[in-house]
Length: 467
Image 1 (cartoon, helix red, strand yellow):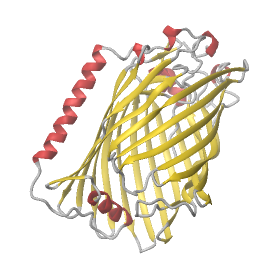
Image 2 (cartoon, one colour):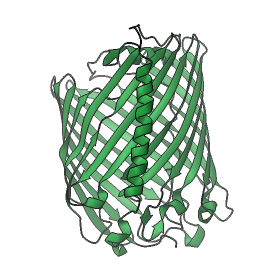
Image 3 (spheres, one colour):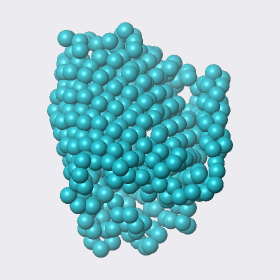
Image 4 (spheres, helix red, strand yellow):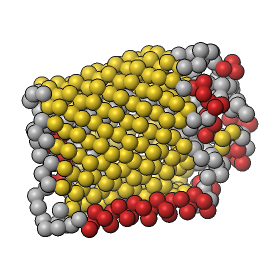
């Protein structure tokens, strides 16, 4: 049955998913046991202490070496980063953000304990494993409680002028799915990825990247329709990137991207597509010292042109500028300002719409109150635009949404490995066909103790697959 129901017609039973239950819990326990076995095998490889090195003369290899040597704990060969995190502890004024006739208020929290294991094997190879179990808790909305798990494993090969990385990941997470469906939906992801980088000279490098992802929504339902029928797919992404680094703080790049999207269910075969993109931009490399600079531009920018070529002849292709940037700069001695923007194609949950263009933009300011405290305010806007024509007359009524969000945060560093963030978020979602406006506010805090997993300054495909 096509998804063509407006938000005003939804009933509570239509929002709930059927995936969380005994079968899902057994599946999650099996994954935990498998991942624990991998971690135990890493401990078995422990030996005498040694100096960990990411060798070579590439900027990715140098970044790998810094990450390994900065790890919080050392046990023989092994390097460990670990943290205990409480996120979004507080009051949510509407768990379903207006998808039900009446708001559903609740108290929530997310508990996670990410662990990163770094195991140098000789001078040129590093095994990198990250395991992140998470539990979502809702005080009264029992069906929203869920166990999540994210696992990622990679092997880094850092040589004189060459750097290689290969690995993959498993994710089984219940989260807010998209701007189109801003409620918790379980999604499984299986991915493999790899990259190769050649440091041609001190300032020039070339990289090739590949990533394949399979999305599975199981038995999750919305408005009486299985999301697997409209969203399950396999994606492949290929990038070729040229980097120019004129000075130690700035890295310029040009990126050519190709993507493939194959949907697994016959009912969504008309959504199969290919994408072509050309991008350019830059990134500002953070200083090595912990103290954050207030002056100067920081962040990254990646903008370009993408074409989404839908295979079905009766579907409308998409094209236009896409990309993202997040830039900040010092305004006063203790104050920074920032702007952010993103625009990209995303696949639609609705049978009558192949894709839509999601746009998010806004800005904010941060004030340094003291050595250990900062205050921030952000204002963001978002909207979606659908193609004018398509199967079944295009987009069903009642799903073109606009978002406005005000966010206030106070970050306090209580100790070297302990930080707390107090937050208040005021959000508003407007459905254009009816003119109806729904609010969702959140008040609470997040707490982090320890050292979360770290990443190297490696080439990343930040542009995008439709989501």
